[in-house]
Structure formats: C-alpha cells, structure tokens
Image: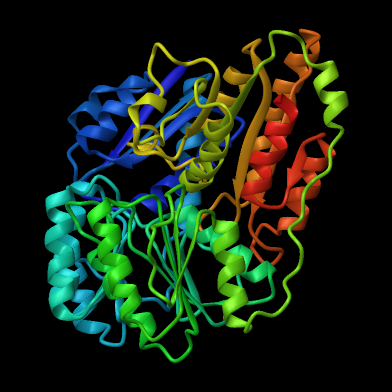
Length: 508
C-alpha cells in the first residue's frame, strides 16, 4: 500500500463539506482509505491513529487543509488525488453566488440574512458565534467540542439581544419551513418544538407528520442547554417565542432528563404560557404536580400523539402500529449462548429510548454509552450483555464524519458485534433527510450481508431489527429504503418504541 498527502496552505473549508468530500473519496474503488480535514491537532492525531500520517501532514497548521489517500500503488494515489479535485470542483459555489473571505464581510453585505450556521472546529466556533451575535444574527452552531463556559457566555449574550443560539452540537432545526443541518421533509402545521435533542427532534417531527399534522417551527437548542451549568436559557427563550407565534397552537419541549432545578424552572415557565405545552423529558418520572396547561409524557411517540391530539381538539388518531414477527420461531432457532441484544445507533435519542426500554426489562445486564447513571455505563469490564451504543457520540466523531454522513464506523461495529457468539439480535436505526448520507441503506447493506454470511457459516441465526427515521418526501425516500432492508431479511418497524418492543420480544 502507498500513502500520499497533499497539504493546501491557508485553504479553509467547513467541516460538513470536508466530511461529505471524504465520504465520496472513501467510496472510490481504488481507495483503501482516505481522510480530508483541516490541519488541527485533533485531525492530525486521528490521521496518525489510522496510520496515514506523513511529514507533510505533521507539519500542517490549523489554517491548512489536509488530503491524504492510501491506495495499492503510487499511480492509484495520484489518480485518487485528481478525483478529489474533480469532486471538489463539483461542490464549489456557482458563479451566480457570492463568497466572502470573512463572516464579517458576509454580515455587512447580506443584510437580509437573519441566521448564521456555524460549522467550524469547536475551538473556533464560539468566536464565530460572537461575531454573528454582534452583527444581530441568530446563530445555529453545528460544531461540537465548544466549552461549557463559551456556551453559557453565548447564550447569555443572545438572551440579552433577543436572539437565539441553537447549539452547540445542534443537529436539527426547521425554521420557517426550511430544514437546517440534519432535518426531514415534513408538513408545516400547528406544532412548535423546542428540542435539546437532534435525532429526538427529527423523530418527533416525522411522527407528527405521519399523524397528518405538521411543524410550525423546530428550534434545536443543543444537548447541554438543560444542564445545571446552562440552565435552559434557550429552551426558555424558545418556548416564549413560540408562544408569541400565531402559527403555533401547541408547544412540545423535548430533552433527555434535565437537571432537577432546570426541569422545575422549565415547567414553571411553561405554566405562564398561553399555549398548551407537551413536555417530554425522555425516561424521566412525571412530576407529582403539573401546571394545568402542561401534558407530561415519557416518549417521543407519546409526545407526537399528545401534541397532535391537542392541536386537533382531541380528534381521533390512527392506532399505534406494531410489527408482527414469528417470535416463537425465532426463539426456538436461537442457540443457548445467544442471549444478548446489541444496538448500534447513529442517533443518540433513538439509542436512549431503546436503552430505557431494555433497561426496564433487564436492569442487571444492560449497558450504554448514553447512560447518565454509571451503573449502566459501558466499561472495558462490562462489554457483554445487552449493549446499546450511540456511534454519533463525541467519543466516536472527534475528527471523523458523523455516522449519519459516513457509515464506516457503524459498519465495522456491525461486523464486530455480529461475530460475538452471544449476539442474538442486532438493532439499528437509519436516519434520512437533509445532511444525511444520500443512500444510507445502500451504504449499510454490504456490512449486513457480511454479518449474515458469517452467521450462516457459523450455523448461528442472526436477527436484525431496524427503524428508518424519515418520510417518503425525504431525498432518500423512506419507502425505497425500507424496501431495500426488507429484501435483505431485516425486520423493519415504524417507530422507535416498536424498535425496542420487537427486539425485546425476540430475546425474552
């Protein structure tokens, strides 16, 4: 194998563009592996860890762009680098678009733009957000690895200015009908959402759409907003904005369980709103006393149904579906050592909802990296039993594309878990929509085929249950994605709760 690197001095590109380019290059048949990113210390460390570092890479600065490819021959490396430039050319701004060297120039010249999306390495994101706020722009920070102190400072500034700071690590928003970052194509309608959860907000939006209603606004606030340190600043501001919005008839507040004091603050603020509120703190116990205008639920499914019910004045909703499978036949075919459920997720909230369901049934043998209680955390000593792993968590995405963009890390995990003789059921999610891989199931199928073939060779059954989060209007088309999975013998359910229920039936 040969490795070749090109370092483009003083050439910046945002992380989303570089992730997308890296994914395309890694799909080339001539390329064994490739990495494209800015020359930050973290990116250089990741490149070194996968064995692709060169003297040129080591000498790169954070202002430089790194392109490194590994191919069978030096000639193929050269061919791959030419293809990189061709792919880059396809993604550059059209001649009719205007580009600026600094964000300040953009704000000065694009006076009608009211929102800035920031997708730069975390160490630079806060300064870019301060520049945007000073220019009077609302901010969506897609970047992760922003410090808590910076987040608190930014959100206090935004509150004082009457602006929003969505994020850091904000994966999803729908503003005035436009999906931002990872978002699905859903109907506009009367339900406004403030979500401290990216895929949870996506799930909520597609459930609302499937029930025949729609979303007025979806304000993502980042997963730490309801922490003790931040205090729910943007959720409080967001719900008040929606309360004043004539297009919003019911508000949904979505988060993993907040800090207790913050939860109380949010509920007290909700009581002051004129608009009915549905609160979903996933997995949290319902408070003993609730304001009269607040409905408290435990799952995204229940949140969507409660919100649409309120919006329609209590009208009849479609029944909850459930995938029927031959549970008895599956249990009978399972080998004695096949006792475990293994969940490998791109979406953190999907992982969390499945984790909560499995933990309730098997509290002594369930572990997850989304668990806040350390009794349920995955450690080197507890990598057996029922494992629910969020592969989109920061520890997996630092310096790497998110698995919703590039499935490489999840595909490797599928092969690893399927090879474990204890694995009985693999549980997977597939997220569609803007920002996600253009064909996530197509990218997933080779790993599933390998896993199924290895199980057959070992004379061991392997059940796979999957949920496709999206709509038929998404660029990837949900119906087509579901059909491709079903053709491979995958059990495809229609929502997150059914994903957990069907998988649990198989191992009970």
